Image 1 (spheres, rainbow over the protein chains, first blue to last red):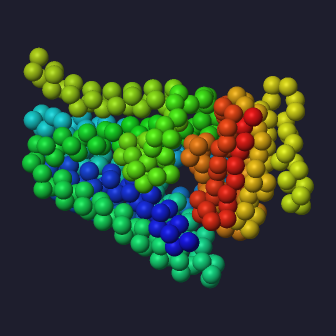
Image 2 (image 1 turned 60 degrees about the horizontal axis):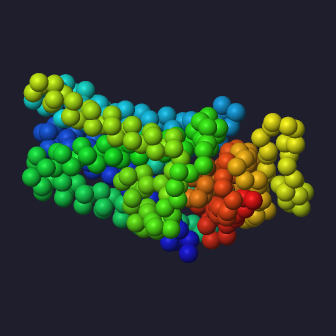
Image 3 (image 1 turned 180 degrees about the vertical axis):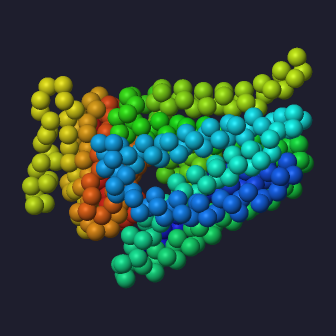
Length: 258
Length: 106
Protein backbone atom coordinates (compact mmCIF):
# COMPACT_ATOMS: atom_id res chain seq x y z
CA UNK A 1 0.00 0.00 0.00
CA UNK A 2 2.69 2.50 1.08
CA UNK A 3 4.81 1.43 -1.89
CA UNK A 4 2.02 2.16 -4.36
CA UNK A 5 1.21 5.50 -2.66
CA UNK A 6 4.84 6.54 -3.05
CA UNK A 7 4.96 5.49 -6.70
CA UNK A 8 1.84 7.54 -7.49
CA UNK A 9 2.82 10.63 -5.47
CA UNK A 10 6.33 10.88 -6.91
CA UNK A 11 5.20 9.98 -10.44
CA UNK A 12 2.64 12.81 -10.40
CA UNK A 13 5.26 15.37 -9.41
CA UNK A 14 7.96 14.05 -11.75
CA UNK A 15 5.63 13.87 -14.76
CA UNK A 16 4.75 17.56 -14.57
CA UNK A 17 8.41 18.59 -14.55
CA UNK A 18 9.41 15.88 -17.06
CA UNK A 19 7.00 17.20 -19.71
CA UNK A 20 8.43 20.73 -19.46
CA UNK A 21 12.05 19.47 -19.48
CA UNK A 22 11.52 17.09 -22.44
CA UNK A 23 9.64 19.64 -24.53
CA UNK A 24 12.24 22.37 -23.94
CA UNK A 25 15.14 19.98 -24.63
CA UNK A 26 13.50 18.77 -27.85
CA UNK A 27 12.77 22.37 -28.87
CA UNK A 28 16.33 23.42 -28.12
CA UNK A 29 17.81 20.52 -30.10
CA UNK A 30 15.41 21.22 -32.96
CA UNK A 31 16.64 24.84 -33.07
CA UNK A 32 20.26 23.54 -32.95
CA UNK A 33 20.85 25.13 -29.55
CA UNK A 34 22.08 21.95 -27.92
CA UNK A 35 21.34 20.80 -24.38
CA UNK A 36 24.20 22.46 -22.56
CA UNK A 37 21.95 24.96 -20.78
CA UNK A 38 20.20 22.01 -19.18
CA UNK A 39 23.38 21.11 -17.26
CA UNK A 40 23.50 24.67 -15.89
CA UNK A 41 20.03 24.25 -14.40
CA UNK A 42 20.91 21.26 -12.22
CA UNK A 43 23.05 22.94 -9.49
CA UNK A 44 20.60 25.85 -8.93
CA UNK A 45 17.65 23.44 -9.12
CA UNK A 46 19.20 21.17 -6.48
CA UNK A 47 20.02 24.11 -4.22
CA UNK A 48 16.62 25.71 -4.75
CA UNK A 49 14.84 22.44 -3.98
CA UNK A 50 16.79 21.91 -0.74
CA UNK A 51 16.24 25.53 0.33
CA UNK A 52 12.52 25.47 -0.51
CA UNK A 53 11.99 22.24 1.44
CA UNK A 54 14.02 23.57 4.39
CA UNK A 55 12.15 26.86 4.76
CA UNK A 56 8.67 25.62 3.85
CA UNK A 57 7.40 25.69 7.45
CA UNK A 58 8.44 29.34 7.86
CA UNK A 59 7.25 30.14 4.35
CA UNK A 60 3.81 28.66 5.14
CA UNK A 61 3.39 31.08 8.06
CA UNK A 62 4.55 34.12 6.08
CA UNK A 63 2.02 36.57 4.61
CA UNK A 64 -0.62 35.66 7.22
CA UNK A 65 -0.45 31.98 6.29
CA UNK A 66 -0.51 32.56 2.53
CA UNK A 67 3.25 32.26 1.95
CA UNK A 68 3.31 28.70 0.59
CA UNK A 69 0.54 29.34 -1.94
CA UNK A 70 1.80 32.77 -3.01
CA UNK A 71 5.32 31.38 -3.60
CA UNK A 72 4.04 28.41 -5.59
CA UNK A 73 1.67 30.61 -7.60
CA UNK A 74 4.50 33.06 -8.32
CA UNK A 75 6.68 30.19 -9.59
CA UNK A 76 3.88 28.99 -11.87
CA UNK A 77 3.18 32.47 -13.25
CA UNK A 78 6.93 32.94 -13.87
CA UNK A 79 7.14 29.62 -15.75
CA UNK A 80 4.14 30.73 -17.84
CA UNK A 81 5.83 34.05 -18.70
CA UNK A 82 9.15 32.33 -19.55
CA UNK A 83 7.35 29.83 -21.79
CA UNK A 84 5.40 32.63 -23.54
CA UNK A 85 8.70 34.41 -24.27
CA UNK A 86 10.27 31.12 -25.47
CA UNK A 87 7.31 30.47 -27.80
CA UNK A 88 7.53 34.01 -29.21
CA UNK A 89 11.28 33.67 -29.89
CA UNK A 90 11.18 30.09 -31.21
CA UNK A 91 8.33 30.96 -33.60
CA UNK A 92 10.45 33.51 -35.44
CA UNK A 93 13.90 32.00 -35.80
CA UNK A 94 14.13 33.65 -39.24
CA UNK A 95 14.46 36.96 -37.34
CA UNK A 96 17.61 35.56 -35.67
CA UNK A 97 16.63 35.65 -32.01
CA UNK A 98 19.05 36.29 -29.20
CA UNK A 99 20.07 32.65 -28.72
CA UNK A 100 21.72 33.22 -25.34
CA UNK A 101 18.55 34.82 -24.03
CA UNK A 102 16.45 31.93 -25.36
CA UNK A 103 18.72 29.40 -23.62
CA UNK A 104 18.54 31.45 -20.42
CA UNK A 105 14.74 31.47 -20.54
CA UNK A 106 14.69 27.70 -21.07
CA UNK A 107 17.09 27.18 -18.17
CA UNK A 108 14.92 29.46 -15.99
CA UNK A 109 11.69 27.62 -16.81
CA UNK A 110 13.29 24.22 -16.16
CA UNK A 111 14.94 25.32 -12.88
CA UNK A 112 11.66 26.71 -11.50
CA UNK A 113 9.71 23.60 -12.55
CA UNK A 114 12.28 21.30 -10.94
CA UNK A 115 12.33 23.28 -7.68
CA UNK A 116 8.55 23.30 -7.36
CA UNK A 117 8.06 19.60 -8.02
CA UNK A 118 11.31 18.54 -6.35
CA UNK A 119 10.61 20.27 -3.03
CA UNK A 120 7.43 18.31 -2.44
CA UNK A 121 9.24 15.03 -3.14
CA UNK A 122 12.06 15.98 -0.75
CA UNK A 123 9.58 16.88 2.02
CA UNK A 124 7.71 13.63 1.45
CA UNK A 125 10.78 11.38 1.49
CA UNK A 126 12.56 13.11 4.39
CA UNK A 127 9.31 12.96 6.40
CA UNK A 128 9.44 9.18 6.27
CA UNK A 129 13.21 8.82 6.60
CA UNK A 130 12.95 8.52 10.41
CA UNK A 131 10.21 5.87 10.26
CA UNK A 132 11.84 2.43 10.03
CA UNK A 133 8.50 0.68 9.36
CA UNK A 134 7.69 2.72 6.25
CA UNK A 135 11.10 3.87 5.10
CA UNK A 136 11.95 1.02 2.74
CA UNK A 137 8.58 1.10 0.98
CA UNK A 138 8.70 4.89 0.60
CA UNK A 139 12.26 4.86 -0.78
CA UNK A 140 11.53 2.03 -3.21
CA UNK A 141 8.19 3.48 -4.30
CA UNK A 142 9.68 6.94 -4.82
CA UNK A 143 12.54 5.52 -6.88
CA UNK A 144 10.06 3.55 -9.00
CA UNK A 145 7.79 6.58 -9.46
CA UNK A 146 10.73 8.81 -10.41
CA UNK A 147 12.00 6.12 -12.81
CA UNK A 148 8.65 5.82 -14.57
CA UNK A 149 8.28 9.61 -14.78
CA UNK A 150 11.77 10.14 -16.21
CA UNK A 151 11.19 7.27 -18.69
CA UNK A 152 8.00 8.90 -19.95
CA UNK A 153 9.95 12.14 -20.36
CA UNK A 154 12.70 10.40 -22.33
CA UNK A 155 10.10 8.65 -24.50
CA UNK A 156 8.43 11.99 -25.27
CA UNK A 157 11.81 13.54 -26.10
CA UNK A 158 12.75 10.67 -28.43
CA UNK A 159 9.36 10.76 -30.15
CA UNK A 160 9.71 14.50 -30.77
CA UNK A 161 13.27 14.11 -32.09
CA UNK A 162 12.20 11.30 -34.43
CA UNK A 163 9.48 13.44 -36.00
CA UNK A 164 9.70 15.70 -39.00
CA UNK A 165 11.48 18.85 -37.61
CA UNK A 166 8.82 21.35 -38.69
CA UNK A 167 6.08 19.26 -37.15
CA UNK A 168 8.11 18.61 -34.00
CA UNK A 169 8.67 22.36 -33.55
CA UNK A 170 4.94 23.07 -33.91
CA UNK A 171 4.01 20.26 -31.51
CA UNK A 172 6.58 21.47 -28.94
CA UNK A 173 5.22 25.02 -29.04
CA UNK A 174 1.62 23.80 -28.86
CA UNK A 175 2.21 21.50 -25.87
CA UNK A 176 4.35 24.08 -24.06
CA UNK A 177 1.62 26.70 -24.52
CA UNK A 178 -1.09 24.36 -23.25
CA UNK A 179 0.91 23.13 -20.23
CA UNK A 180 1.92 26.67 -19.23
CA UNK A 181 -1.70 27.88 -19.51
CA UNK A 182 -2.73 25.03 -17.21
CA UNK A 183 -0.12 26.24 -14.71
CA UNK A 184 -1.56 29.75 -14.86
CA UNK A 185 -4.95 28.30 -13.94
CA UNK A 186 -3.46 26.21 -11.12
CA UNK A 187 -1.82 29.38 -9.78
CA UNK A 188 -5.23 31.07 -9.54
CA UNK A 189 -6.53 28.09 -7.54
CA UNK A 190 -3.68 28.45 -5.05
CA UNK A 191 -4.50 32.13 -4.60
CA UNK A 192 -8.18 31.27 -4.05
CA UNK A 193 -7.08 28.81 -1.37
CA UNK A 194 -5.62 31.66 0.72
CA UNK A 195 -8.35 34.15 -0.17
CA UNK A 196 -6.09 36.36 -2.28
CA UNK A 197 -8.47 35.79 -5.19
CA UNK A 198 -12.24 35.54 -4.81
CA UNK A 199 -13.47 31.98 -4.89
CA UNK A 200 -16.61 31.13 -6.85
CA UNK A 201 -18.76 28.07 -7.43
CA UNK A 202 -17.81 25.75 -10.28
CA UNK A 203 -19.14 26.44 -13.78
CA UNK A 204 -19.51 22.73 -14.43
CA UNK A 205 -18.68 19.36 -12.91
CA UNK A 206 -17.18 16.85 -15.32
CA UNK A 207 -15.90 14.52 -12.59
CA UNK A 208 -18.54 11.98 -13.66
CA UNK A 209 -17.03 12.01 -17.15
CA UNK A 210 -13.32 12.10 -16.30
CA UNK A 211 -12.45 11.94 -12.60
CA UNK A 212 -9.31 13.80 -11.52
CA UNK A 213 -8.47 10.66 -9.54
CA UNK A 214 -8.35 8.45 -12.66
CA UNK A 215 -5.21 7.82 -14.71
CA UNK A 216 -6.79 9.68 -17.64
CA UNK A 217 -7.60 12.56 -15.29
CA UNK A 218 -4.04 12.69 -13.96
CA UNK A 219 -2.57 12.69 -17.48
CA UNK A 220 -5.03 15.36 -18.64
CA UNK A 221 -4.07 17.36 -15.54
CA UNK A 222 -0.34 17.08 -16.29
CA UNK A 223 -0.77 18.22 -19.91
CA UNK A 224 -3.86 20.42 -19.98
CA UNK A 225 -4.17 21.34 -16.28
CA UNK A 226 -7.49 19.47 -16.34
CA UNK A 227 -9.98 20.58 -13.70
CA UNK A 228 -13.26 18.71 -13.24
CA UNK A 229 -14.85 21.68 -11.44
CA UNK A 230 -13.41 24.95 -12.79
CA UNK A 231 -14.69 28.38 -11.74
CA UNK A 232 -15.42 31.16 -14.23
CA UNK A 233 -12.22 32.96 -13.20
CA UNK A 234 -10.11 29.84 -13.75
CA UNK A 235 -11.64 29.26 -17.18
CA UNK A 236 -11.10 32.89 -18.15
CA UNK A 237 -7.45 32.72 -17.05
CA UNK A 238 -6.88 29.46 -18.92
CA UNK A 239 -8.40 30.79 -22.14
CA UNK A 240 -6.52 34.12 -21.85
CA UNK A 241 -3.35 32.14 -21.22
CA UNK A 242 -3.92 30.20 -24.44
CA UNK A 243 -4.81 33.39 -26.35
CA UNK A 244 -1.56 35.10 -25.30
CA UNK A 245 0.38 31.96 -26.33
CA UNK A 246 -1.34 31.95 -29.73
CA UNK A 247 -0.45 35.63 -30.17
CA UNK A 248 3.17 34.99 -29.12
CA UNK A 249 3.35 32.22 -31.69
CA UNK A 250 1.41 33.65 -34.64
CA UNK A 251 1.43 37.46 -34.38
CA UNK A 252 5.06 38.00 -35.45
CA UNK A 253 4.49 35.96 -38.62
CA UNK A 254 1.40 37.93 -39.51
CA UNK A 255 3.37 41.16 -39.09
CA UNK A 256 6.16 39.85 -41.32
CA UNK A 257 3.82 38.82 -44.09
CA UNK A 258 1.81 42.05 -43.86
CA UNK B 1 -7.27 17.33 24.08
CA UNK B 2 -8.52 15.49 21.04
CA UNK B 3 -12.08 15.63 22.26
CA UNK B 4 -11.78 19.37 22.74
CA UNK B 5 -10.38 19.69 19.23
CA UNK B 6 -13.24 17.67 17.83
CA UNK B 7 -15.84 19.72 19.64
CA UNK B 8 -14.31 23.04 18.70
CA UNK B 9 -14.22 21.91 15.09
CA UNK B 10 -17.94 21.31 15.15
CA UNK B 11 -18.62 24.80 16.46
CA UNK B 12 -18.38 27.95 14.44
CA UNK B 13 -15.48 29.86 15.89
CA UNK B 14 -16.28 33.09 14.11
CA UNK B 15 -19.80 33.87 15.25
CA UNK B 16 -19.52 37.62 14.76
CA UNK B 17 -21.56 38.99 11.87
CA UNK B 18 -19.81 39.35 8.57
CA UNK B 19 -16.87 37.26 9.71
CA UNK B 20 -15.77 34.19 7.78
CA UNK B 21 -16.81 31.10 9.78
CA UNK B 22 -13.78 29.19 11.02
CA UNK B 23 -13.42 25.43 11.41
CA UNK B 24 -10.55 23.41 12.80
CA UNK B 25 -9.23 19.96 11.99
CA UNK B 26 -6.35 18.11 13.60
CA UNK B 27 -4.03 15.54 12.09
CA UNK B 28 -2.85 12.99 14.67
CA UNK B 29 -1.44 9.51 14.06
CA UNK B 30 -2.11 10.12 10.34
CA UNK B 31 -5.85 10.51 10.98
CA UNK B 32 -8.08 13.56 10.61
CA UNK B 33 -9.95 14.61 13.75
CA UNK B 34 -12.78 15.03 13.18
CA UNK B 35 -12.93 13.25 9.85
CA UNK B 36 -16.25 14.82 8.98
CA UNK B 37 -17.06 18.53 8.91
CA UNK B 38 -20.43 20.09 8.18
CA UNK B 39 -20.28 23.55 6.67
CA UNK B 40 -23.02 25.84 5.34
CA UNK B 41 -23.71 25.97 1.59
CA UNK B 42 -22.77 29.02 -0.52
CA UNK B 43 -20.52 30.34 2.24
CA UNK B 44 -16.78 30.89 2.29
CA UNK B 45 -15.23 29.25 5.35
CA UNK B 46 -11.76 29.29 6.85
CA UNK B 47 -10.33 25.89 7.69
CA UNK B 48 -7.36 25.67 10.05
CA UNK B 49 -5.54 22.34 9.90
CA UNK B 50 -3.24 21.50 12.84
CA UNK B 51 -0.68 18.81 12.18
CA UNK B 52 0.06 17.22 15.58
CA UNK B 53 2.25 14.53 14.01
CA UNK B 54 6.02 15.05 13.79
CA UNK B 55 5.89 14.17 10.07
CA UNK B 56 4.66 16.42 7.24
CA UNK B 57 1.28 15.89 5.62
CA UNK B 58 -0.35 17.29 2.50
CA UNK B 59 -4.01 18.20 2.81
CA UNK B 60 -5.47 17.44 -0.59
CA UNK B 61 -8.91 17.35 -2.19
CA UNK B 62 -9.72 16.99 -5.85
CA UNK B 63 -13.34 17.95 -5.20
CA UNK B 64 -12.40 21.12 -3.31
CA UNK B 65 -9.43 21.94 -5.62
CA UNK B 66 -7.20 22.32 -2.60
CA UNK B 67 -3.66 21.15 -1.76
CA UNK B 68 -1.38 22.33 0.98
CA UNK B 69 1.69 20.87 2.65
CA UNK B 70 1.56 21.17 6.45
CA UNK B 71 4.84 20.40 8.14
CA UNK B 72 5.04 18.35 11.35
CA UNK B 73 3.89 20.27 14.44
CA UNK B 74 2.62 23.18 12.34
CA UNK B 75 -0.73 24.45 11.15
CA UNK B 76 -2.08 25.74 7.87
CA UNK B 77 -4.99 27.91 6.77
CA UNK B 78 -7.16 26.88 3.83
CA UNK B 79 -10.17 28.82 2.60
CA UNK B 80 -12.94 26.77 1.00
CA UNK B 81 -16.23 27.61 -0.64
CA UNK B 82 -18.68 28.99 -1.47
CA UNK B 83 -19.83 25.46 -2.34
CA UNK B 84 -23.01 23.80 -3.48
CA UNK B 85 -24.56 21.25 -1.09
CA UNK B 86 -22.86 17.88 -1.40
CA UNK B 87 -20.08 15.61 -0.22
CA UNK B 88 -16.47 16.73 -0.68
CA UNK B 89 -13.84 14.13 0.31
CA UNK B 90 -10.33 15.18 1.33
CA UNK B 91 -7.26 13.13 2.22
CA UNK B 92 -3.69 13.31 3.43
CA UNK B 93 -1.61 12.73 0.32
CA UNK B 94 1.36 11.45 2.33
CA UNK B 95 -0.75 8.89 4.24
CA UNK B 96 -3.82 8.22 2.10
CA UNK B 97 -4.30 4.78 3.64
CA UNK B 98 -5.50 6.28 6.92
CA UNK B 99 -5.86 10.05 6.51
CA UNK B 100 -9.30 10.32 4.91
CA UNK B 101 -12.08 12.77 5.65
CA UNK B 102 -15.04 14.53 4.12
CA UNK B 103 -16.74 17.87 4.20
CA UNK B 104 -20.52 17.86 4.03
CA UNK B 105 -21.95 21.05 2.64
CA UNK B 106 -25.58 21.57 3.59
